[in-house]
Image (cartoon, rainbow, N blue to C red; front, side, top):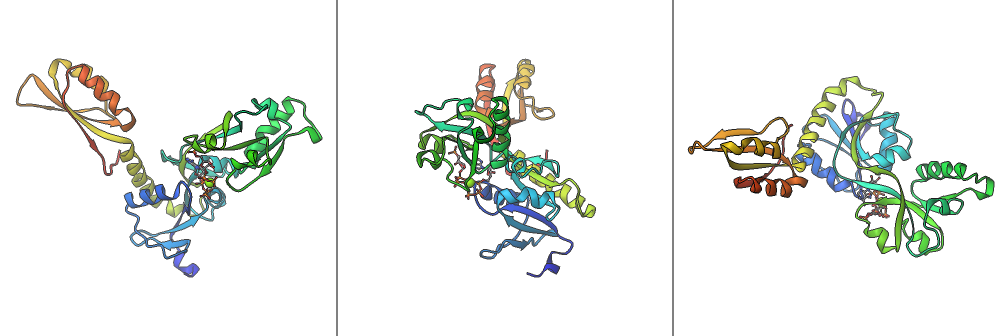
Length: 302
Ligand SMILES: Nc1ncnc2c1ncn2[C@@H]1O[C@H](COP(=O)(O)OP(=O)(O)OP(=O)(O)O)[C@@H](O)[C@H]1O
Ligand SMILES: O=P(O)(O)OC[C@H]1O[C@H](OP(=O)(O)OP(=O)(O)O)[C@H](O)[C@@H]1O
Ligand SMILES: [Mg+2]
C-alpha cells in the first residue's frame, strides 16, 4: 500500500495482539467498520468509511496518538500513564473491558511483606516509569540514597517468573483474576493504579476536519459498549406497586409503562445494568412483579 492510499483517511490504531485485540475486533464489527486484513499487514483500509486501521502494540498506541501520527486509538489507561502521554491524549470513551490493576507483588511465603521492606531491593516490571515513580517516592520517604535505592529492572513479559528465577525480590505487574499471580506463588501488597481500555484521540489534532467522523465513530462505539453493559427488563406489576417497581428499575431516563387489558395491572420495560440483573429480579419478585423477562441488546444508541 502506498502512502497516497491513506490521504484524507482517519487513522485509527488498534492493538495488534494481546488481551485487547479480540475485544477491539468485536467493537469494530458492532460499529459496522468493514475491512479485510491481509496476512501480517498492519495497515488496512476500511471499505465503507474514510478510515484506515493501523494495528500496533497496545503500549505504542499512546505515543502514536499523542504525537498525532494517528488520529484515534484504543489502548489501556495504564500504558497511557507509562508512556507519560496523559497530557497529549484525550480520553473520549471508557470501553468497559481490559479492566485490571497494576500491583506490587511479592512471594507469599517470603520475608518481605510490605512495600517499605521491599524498598531498596530488586523490583522487576514492564512498567519501569510508573514503578520508578512509585519506588522513587518511597525511597525519598525512607531516606534511601545512592546504592540503597530500589533497583527497577525492565522485562517485556512473563514478569511473574522473576522472583522464582532469583532475579527479583518483588514485581510490579497487571492483575485481573489473580490466577497468574497465585500460580507464581505471589500476592499483592500495594496497588499503583486501576486501568481499563479507552478510546483516545490526540489533544492537539492535526486534522480538525476529521472531528465529525470521530464523533460518528464515538457514538457507534458507545452504542456497542452500552449494549454489552445493559439488558432490557420487562415485567407486569399491580398498578398500586408501580412506585416501588420503578424505584427498582428506574431505567436510564425513565421506564416505559404500558397499560394491560386488566386495568389493575401495568407492563414496565426498563434498561438494567447486566451485572445487577439477578438482584433486580429478586427485588421485583419480592414486590409481586410477574412474567419478568430479560432481553439482551445487540446494539443501541443511548
Ligand atoms: N489480564 C488482563 N486483564 C485485563 N486487561 C489486561 C490484562 N493484561 C493486560 N491488560 C490490558 O491490556 C493491555 C495490553 O496488554 P497485553 O499484555 O494484552 O498486550 P501485549 O503485552 O502487547 O501482548 P502480549 O502480552 O500477548 O505480548 C494492557 O496495557 C492492559 O491495559
Ligand atoms: O490476573 P490474571 O487474570 O491472571 O491476568 C494477569 C496477567 O495478564 C497479563 O499477562 P499476559 O497474558 O499479557 O502475558 P505476558 O505476561 O506475557 O504479557 C499480565 O501481565 C499478567 O501476567
Ligand atoms: Mg502482556
